[in-house]
Image (cartoon, rainbow, N blue to C red; front, side):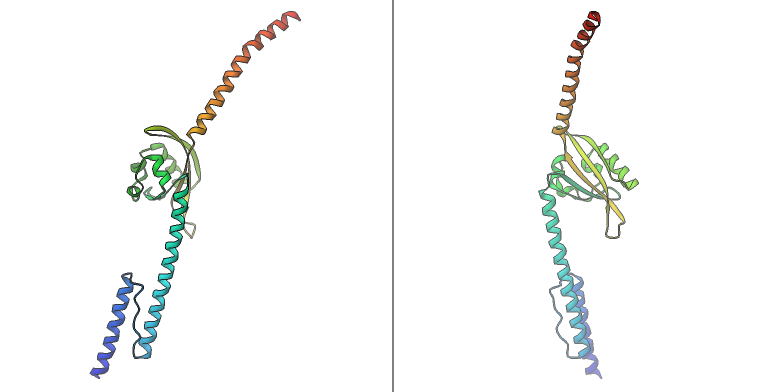
Amino acid sequence: SWLVSKRITTQIDRMRNGARRFANGELTHRMPMAASLEFSELAESMNQMARQLQQRIDEIDSQRGKTEAVLASMREGVIATDMDQRVISMNQAAAGMFGVRQAASEGRNILEVLRNHDFQALMNRSLSSGDSLEADIVHHNQVERTLSVHCTPLLDSSKKRIGGLVVISDVTQLRRLENMRRDFAASVSHEIKTPLITIGGYADRVL
């Protein structure tokens, strides 16, 4: 009885130690096959579980790497926050627009990171209403920039709102050209208006 009990206890200890290693992230560890059929099947089941977990983790890491590569190559700034407006993720383009360090931004409040009240106010409205909102904001970082900011709710797989996603485009040059076009049109209209009035008055006298 003592020998049988000792053998069972030893196998249970091996299972416990193996499960502990799996829990600590050592998914490449494999439990040895036990002498008894029951423990052998349990060991194989746990080894299979570890293989499947490692495969899923590798898939998630691969997908995350692809997503980070896409975000890094984008010219638009992208910022994801939770419902409390703490930064979850920020790509390099967004960090460059606001003159902040990308790694130091995660976990901090968006206002603390960007220091722009108009940006935060737009995010507040989007997060509280659940609507997608878009607006231009002016940001001063050595030079004045006009940024087109689009805020939309960030949803999980069950369509529950978990935060906000912001896409930012630098439209400084575009807005400057639009202002120049409007100023030019107004100037031309004014310059043409005076001779037209003169010609109209002369025509009235002739008629």
